[in-house]
Length: 486
Ligand code: NAD
Image 1: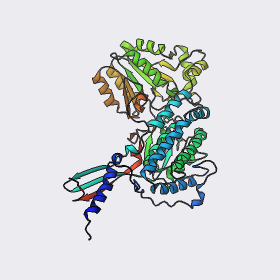
Image 2: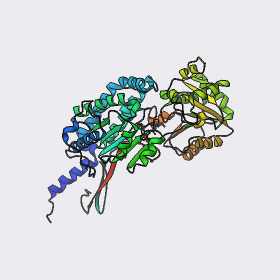
Image 3: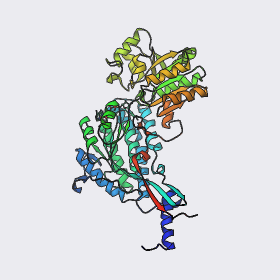
Image 4: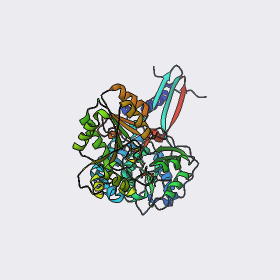
């Protein structure tokens, strides 16, 4: 076996350190991640051009094959190009934020343009890129161990109608930062704006020196095409964002799955809380995009001692309380026959329009409906700015009720209190991916709160707010008895 000379050792150590400390050492000319193991053989290269838009394919097989070819090309590019691609994706999304927000509301009929602007901006600017994939090194008496993050390959992503463009932006940035290609099957009710966005993102990637078709999509998505994606041999990892149906289907597919499912976020307000702050937070959070966001507050549980005053402040800050016979009218209008699911016609609609439909003319951001724990406004994820309101004798009872109405989704919850022990107790017992203290739940997405954002909050599979790290595999290389530099 030949011995390495000092110059060769120094050169290898330099390369290793460049990877361990990429922020201080400039960019490596070598590909950052090794390709994922896969036996899938894509079809002939002639199929990769689509006339429907860059990355938009009539047929799922072609979309997957094109993504495989793009992934193979990406594997040969540098980290520097990958960073440029992500920057170009952010720039095109910033330029398109207005367009995307208008198009999404027009096509889906859900939410508010002013709030979609904020959500799209958030996804564009606060989704982490390659900087979150820090290689790690351990050194000691036995040499050096290095771990790096490698891509899976081609990821299958299924996205919801509630955050159509935000989820594509967030998933695409994270997946490509991880060195992957992606094939999307979007919600059929948002395919127009989604196809438009996929074309724009691919153009940005190509302009930054990346391959064509790194993000592919099916032009006419259906539940059947989503299920075919889940079973496709060319897909290494599934990332699904939606309700219980898609989560169950993906988790039964036999593929590795990251599943972001439904929620029913409760807000607890106790007698020690700053009630003005709580009221403003509840209205701001519960009205976000007309409450279609999975993290948005869906019901309020107030300790009796302060419930009337809290309600008064909610009404002074943009809330409207529906009372008496109007409650039954509202229930008939917006709740489905099972008492748990919404009447889809009213999902994501303005509070004032909902009020008008039951004969009330008033401007409001949210509607509150007082009832007991079993009320559908407490139990169901209604995805509209109609929040249940109930009272309990003590904060402990409120926390216990919040846990019950959250149904074990483990998604999101919130508490307003100045009692640290109670905040701590609720955070621990409700065990959700996001828990906000004295702030609207959207602060937990990094909107007015610290930290990065994600629009795929994977509670069923445990990743929480997903980012590029979750879209990569960990790989270790151990170099025994050498390569320490001290
Ligand atoms: P949805 O479940 O109806 O659809 C989501 C996606 O899954 C769509 O692309 C749809 O075509 C597909 N789909 C639905 N059922 C399927 C099945 N059986 N097999 C294969 N594919 C299927 O949800 P939606 O109305 O678009 O979005 C709202 C729901 O998503 C709410 O429950 C909300 O809480 C949840 N959501 C969760 C997150 C999160 O990060 N946890 C984010 C956004 C939305």
